[in-house]
Image (tube, rainbow over all chains, first blue to last red):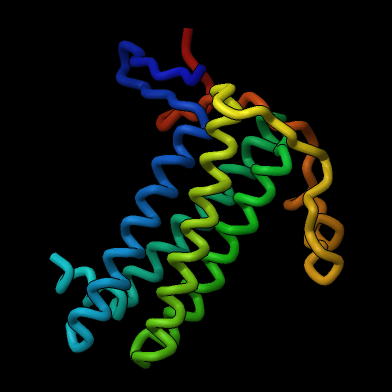
Length: 45
Length: 145
């Protein structure tokens, strides 16, 4: 079970697997948005 | 919204950010391996390889971002690499949470023409079987009492 805890000094810890899930989900969403945008607005600057 | 996203794909800062984040992630992985002594499993090695692929694609895109077809191709490849990274991350997460039956081995399963685990064992050699992953701390890698 992953550990999410708040320390009194606001130190937040999650497991590597949880962190990787968040990062990779953000990467897929980000690249998908950029790619769809590039097709829809080819001359965007 | 998508208009801004499209503009991002042609912006050097976007690709530099991908390179920087990728290097930081690889650095964190090596820090946990060699400083905190958390050996990587085979899935972690696959994740390192996909992050390295994203860095390589971002370097190419940094130089080719002004050319429409190469830029689109690199964006498609980056999305594919990110999807593969998500799939490997899900496997690590699912193994850790006991959501799937783990059949993790010590072999990376890489073909002989891409045996990076033998060419660069310092970075790509698995040390342990899959299972628990360490807790990461944003401010410090060591928990305080």
